[in-house]
Image 1 (tube, rainbow, N blue to C red):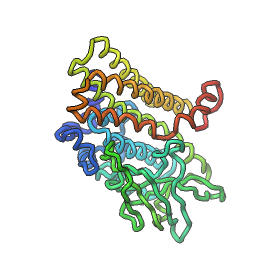
Image 2 (cartoon, rainbow, N blue to C red):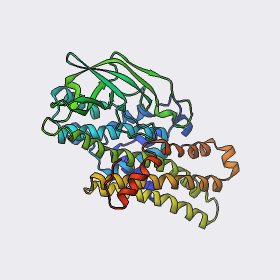
Image 3 (cartoon, rainbow, N blue to C red):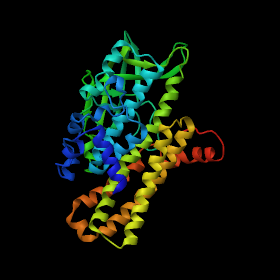
Length: 378
């Protein structure tokens, strides 16, 4: 398929050999809880996709990023979901420290290791809870000498067993005493961090989405990224912008899984030409929406316009995926469903997009307000 080939080409250009190595394993082995896909991803430079070139990364733009994520989703939906959590976190951290808030020496040294050493970043925000903002703090911070003690938990937390750094958001007093968002950088081997079983479904089990608990985890002040005293709200603004990265990348991950189902129908020439064209139109509409927003972001769209565009694409694609799944499974036929567990797996793997926040119900009033000329407040 032409557009899927373009996605695979982007992945090969930025992560040479990654897809070939992944494809040496059967699909269902890639998706198990003990799958090696994250180790393979790390070994092929996956951690550096959105890391600036000055830090040894690929510094991919938004269009390349969604294409790479789609290619990963077509090969391993679990890996694409996990990679999204790493990449959207990387996009935020490096934007913070490179363009907004000068990093401390220790922050800079830690972030400089991400791409060269394949360090994976887990997200402690609320992306697993449908009706919540992904940027809402899920951890509390208590001040102590030389920093803060963190307590809380995140479930599910992708990359739970492979993460090197856990990031989260906490509310801390700023220079004027007002509450403000801050981002701690928590090394995964810190005393007090533990991982507990949580994900029981076989679908997307390879993303390692377990519970991560923090009990009295000390983070020194020098590893906490804050807003600057003259512009303490800038961190909040940048996190909101990072929301666009999350929505684009997670949508692309599921478009990738739908692409594999569609490709199976095309290769096996199932149904009539009209049936296959209808299926292809559904898929390419989803691809066009996602890539269209990515191009606009690459070319400078930002702020509430970008957020609205990303959410519009996400919810439209979410609806299209259900139709693509139904059409593809029907065209592949009952024997394929019975004999090929991959078909049932890929169909099931399309549904979790609906579980990522924000939910359609909570977003709808804000989008209607925006569509009618008002501000967007997600």
